[in-house]
Amino acid sequence: MPKLKTNKAAKKRYSYTATGKVKRTKANRRHRLATKTPRAKARGKVLDAYADKTCEVGIKKLLPYGN
Image (cartoon, rainbow, N blue to C red; front, side, top):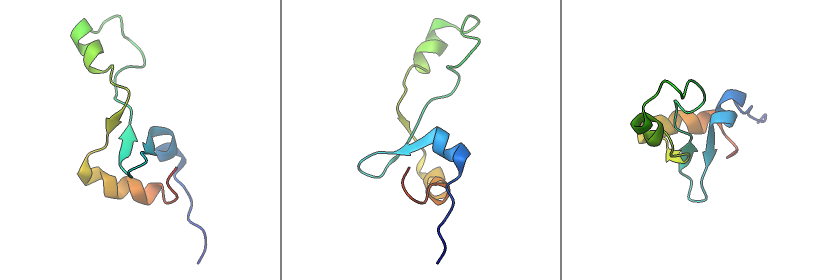
């Protein structure tokens, strides 16, 4: 059977934890922070969030080798 290709866009956005959960970074923390309220900035401060269980199956297909 041939090797599967890793989706490069998913590789940049997601990673696996040691227990196999899919880790992601929260959105809305990259730019235009001056116009956001402190509350909105604080909510996006969490760098390590976990992907939803419904999305996890699709992400694991994009990352077949646990990148």
